[in-house]
Image (cartoon, rainbow, N blue to C red; front, side, top):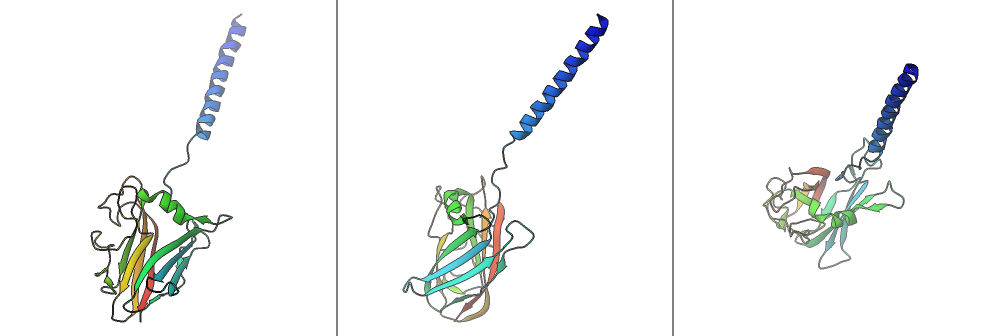
Length: 205
């Protein structure tokens, strides 16, 4: 009887341990995927459309063929605008590692309370907004045409009026921030994570 009890005892222990093991595996399988991951972006296109002539369109692109891999987005074009003109700026933002391509711009619209574009540019390159953008000082003027569900700026659509003076080899910088749970009316470029930070050469002729 003692021998039988011995085996019963240790068989029960083994059964309990195996149950714990499989329960642990099940728990691992049930671990949710992390939320608020950065967007995978392979292609960014800036589209400047002259508000007085919609056939006057200026595009500048950046591409990253390996998405989240070791390569960064690479600037492909300079931004060449005319003097004294007003442009509406929009974006085409894609993840072309997916088939078909995933429109990240639509995702930003859906998660508008988690995203904001910030802009920097050569001082007085534009008469409106004037200055040098809101990257260094978030309260500086940018003509945002869109807001999130809380009334805070997004930046998928903005308006720009170029200076009457020419500019060669200036800079136009755009930073897309991902700010889940931290975006407010006073958010800055230092809040949240960076989806991309692009510096284009800006010419105004």
